[in-house]
Length: 130
Image (cartoon, rainbow, N blue to C red; front, side):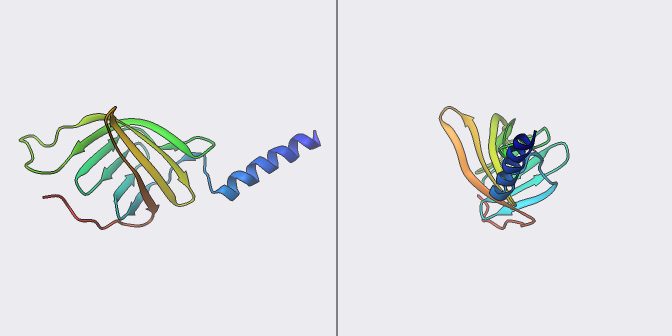
């Protein structure tokens, strides 16, 4: 059906024009002034000035460029406890548009971090907590 093909092509063109990508997020460092998100094929690590995050699954975006994954979050400020930081369950909600990922971390009903922005191929430099 010719109209069906035209609509499909139009939707695909709009998605490309908007810069959204469906599928696995490319591996590597996505960085910025707020930290670094290192994406692996099966997981991701988040390095922030005063915290860290772990996503223990591949980051795969939906057709609108969004993702929502479970993971772990730890505050890394002040004295570190023996055995390392205390990891808490968290949700990592984000979107990819072109070479930019925007991410919000939901740690609890009363604590969220973000939105954070990361750019593909950039290694972020940022101050550390003491």
